[in-house]
Length: 342
Ligand code: IPM
Ligand code: MG
Image (tube, rainbow, N blue to C red; front, side):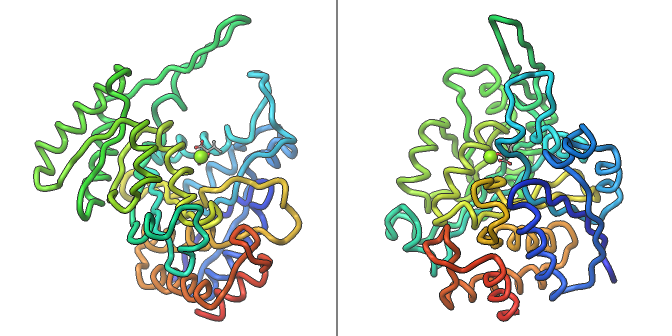
């Protein structure tokens, strides 16, 4: 059976890593693709970072694969001008993608590529479950000449559903991360997490950590974590931090999921890397690994997902290193190395 995938290459290295990834996808299944605009390129071509056609096409797709959005060309502090990131936020909200899964598992072959000592990171296999459609990102924004604010609000339903995703994903425990010693929204968040735990998942070990402490524990003892559940803003920051454990942010995939049956969106955690865009050296592995998540969570094709992930592992074990990992392999070589393993 053929699956229909909407590709949103976006900006910077986005088009390069997405093109590499469709080559790999084609090696494991039968897919049809449709490419649409998002981000800066969509602003350039239509004036809108998320054209209506793009959102409509995504709603009809089986899954969406996104490259990256943004770049210095479109950076602005003027609230009246469109920004590429609005495209990404708009699509997350538009598709109801409230659950962002960011697995962090350094591969054995890359243990020495990490800025952290090997003995610190060995055994790390954690999952950041980030709430993706609420909190400060989507609160009411205000701006006058002398004051600006972003409301940080969560509803019970929003906290309950992300907590459920985390409890279902837990193998050893769930660590809830908040800032309840300061923020009202965090005290509410924690109460709701405790509630869901008591009523629906009493058998799962649950602990709590303040976000500043979690930031420290992530680098001092990352292997202690299993599932981390946290809000949109803290999740954004902690997942980048967690990415460095793997040696490069070029290695980290993500899945953004909504209600059962809605198409998921899959994207690398890294950005558009404008400094290397167009030079053919971008690391495509985070996008290829995002395609594995697409197969697993988006299409229910776990076998193919597994095949892809182990092909990436074996390619790295065979010595594949892109520049971000201290090597010199270009995007094309990296893609071929993975294809050979498949
Ligand atoms: C991410 C990115 C986005 C975010 C940006 C590009 C809007 O940093 O997916 O983590 O902040 O969510
Ligand atoms: Mg981020």
